[in-house]
Length: 532
Image 1 (cartoon, one colour):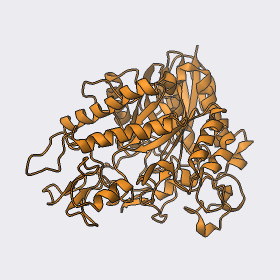
Image 2 (cartoon, rainbow, N blue to C red):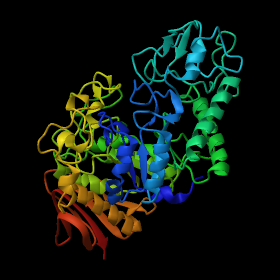
Image 3 (cartoon, rainbow, N blue to C red):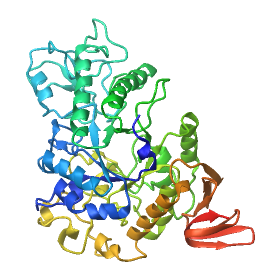
Image 4 (cartoon, one colour):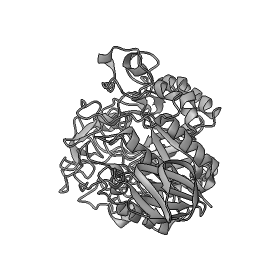
């Protein structure tokens, strides 16, 4: 497996379209990131994770790749990425890319070739084609939409998609191959699937050779079809295990992070961590007040980090305990937010209310991931236009968490010199919107609060991922001991709360007072304390 640096890391996610525009076309680019590296370094983060940067028609914001080996021209060039890797490395920051492993764009040359073929490729099809529409016609990734799309070209029949119609699934085989009546269900060792396995290695190796530290893999466990079955999970894990063994030999420091949790099927694990996704219950039950909408698979519930104090940490703690029971030392990534759903500051949640959530995220035993803009308290903006597939469900608008980074008080908040109408997405129209410039030298700002949290985490190993966690109170306030030496208390509700705890000295606290038998934590209060 990769070097163990990742367990102590703090990640920073950049949605490249919206971070910094260096050439005035209204879309962020790699040169803009290079120009802003000092800000990122000032946070104290260790690795930047970029959403897809590869060539794409951008039907799904770059998650529809047309060339895995070329940086999208709107972001710059391959040389720009190499320069970014080197410039970030000088600041002690690694670069991680997003790998869309399970599907491509319909504009990818692989798909265009098969679309215009008379029939199956003698070397093995890279995609999954059938001439007669199968009985199972509904997509899992896009509920209510057909899984099979009628061929728009000379090739007869249908192709299998993964998400949007423009994202045909790559052929990594089926856990249960078909017979004569289902010839499109290739075995995992058929020529087409083997071609795609090699292509994955080629793509990964191409970018690792240019200095990137690793990949976050989109839909990592959807590769071998029948993925909801035990056989499907086992076959996909086996595929990634093959890639991990190759990496251990060729690029032993490379990190692979999946979208979600790696299935436990009895084999050695291929990925370096699990990921508690923002849109899944373990994360959503803490932070999601549904101001951004509700997905079909989500159950409405009051979040724990909300002023009314009607939420529960139990769904999160149950998921965490289950994951750690299987692999106690395995890192788990936990984000402030991401490109697919609401930010921490959503609905009526204020910057003041965010602080208890930030304390939790940077002191719980996870690998924290800071979504760009959350370090200054950027807001989720509702009802934004459907740009590059942001609205993939009538109740699910991702545009509101993808708005341009707010740098200063100049035009377009310093994001771009383009006319406002040309911007990728609108700037937050609030004249009081937070900016980096306004917060940079303000010791009471959200930005400097985040810097202080990360600095405290770096200074005290007990606050990082490897140290033990003992939960003293799972309600209001939430209280836990890290590494046997540090007490953390957070009270995200409006009403004060008290608890009995051992004597402790505050390292960072707001609204925490000592009582005869413990602590009283004011509404929205928090504390990181050293046990005496």
